[in-house]
Length: 139
Image 1 (cartoon, helix red, strand yellow):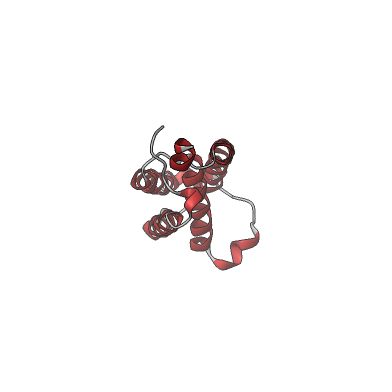
Image 2 (spheres, rainbow, N blue to C red):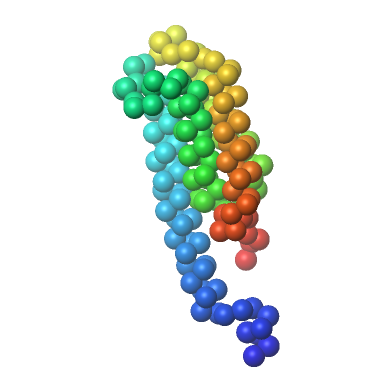
């Protein structure tokens, strides 16, 4: 009885752990697919038209990196949030460096990297407010 009072309902805890594990594995697959898609779209010499093209490329950067940030928080729950911000921001900077290659006919713009980083920081910060997305201590 004392263990139940301290730990809560064991069946509910097992169910919660199963949900977290499933979200983490699905999130990892989704994260890597989304990251690959974002990088490919960023380095294609002539990317296909997207429905959001009319809103400007900053909106595309914000959507891409906000999505990657949310997926990273879900996929890597034990990774420190600052490391997620650092690594995704580095990915955004790396994309801009690759876009400076003349053969790609793309534009390297530091403002794109700033938009990426702002989106990352906002989403990772907001994720702290959602209980299911909070960091978990290693078991």
